[in-house]
Length: 415
Image 1 (tube, helix red, strand yellow):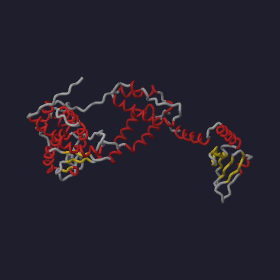
Image 2 (tube, helix red, strand yellow):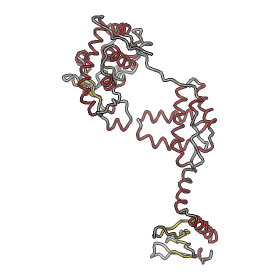
Image 3 (cartoon, helix red, strand yellow):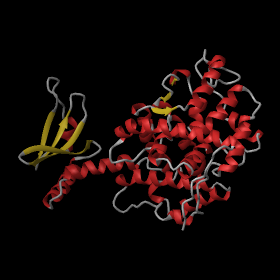
Image 4 (cartoon, rainbow, N blue to C red):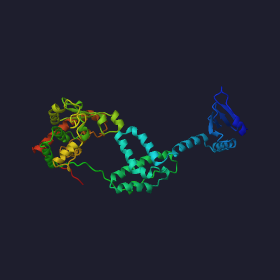
């Protein structure tokens, strides 16, 4: 049996890595060459020796170390492994200390950021800092009540930002789902059921004309556009190719093969998750003869540079996102037709007016094509089908614009 005096004077010889001083019942004091002293209780499991750290000397005196050993013995006798209990306590302690909403939210954000684009990561932090941290940031996660979070979300609604409130709830839900595994059995996700308390939000659709007669008027106005050749060409290509505005305005000459009539957009430029951008396949866009003609006409003007549609102030940057939008407003169609809306216009009329294959249309829109044959099959079969389809679409737009031989398909019955 050790005494406090013996513990105080215990030293480890310089030639040893450690020295042990037994107290009995498996309890011993371990001393390092540097002078640190720690209490351990010797354990056995599956025929192997282990040990349980009880504390440091002199913070834990002999009598306290014996009580800690006896408590561990009681746990073991009841079938509970005291070593596993200690590991769990350490994990809880590690998360308990900084478990404010801000700390957990930023820890969650740091874990997700590797799979996000830089823009999405910045946008998420901005919303946390603007909408959730001011009221909840310094609150321990376990103390926040559902009605408190609801009040925070309703403050966002009061400024008319219904979509933002919906996103803030989504962020809070993900933070709580991240925290719960470390929170203990008594905790729950306080975001459950709150969505029903918020004002229903319906996502806004991009303005798009889908009625052939009105779309024909738009096409005629676009062909009569008197602006610069870059904006005019981008304006005319927008309905023909119906790709995302960012992809069209950032089109590069190196991505085009006008001989084979193909535009290959690198995966990094596509609207995808970061891991998909890095490892995904490029998006192939077949070019109808009308698109090839427009691009060949533009080549003498911008073919010496990187971008097909370079910016006015700097040729090292692409055309402004506002360029085609402004042209649509100048033509009197800005409130009816957005640049992005050409995708919806094409998607609707390709099916309703031309009765073409929806799967090939989705592939041309760069939407994931769900097919039992798999994506590899889609990339081969649908590319050939999409060449035919995009040419049919471009020819249809010409007929629609000139008013020649346009026979609308019968409308599907609804009800």
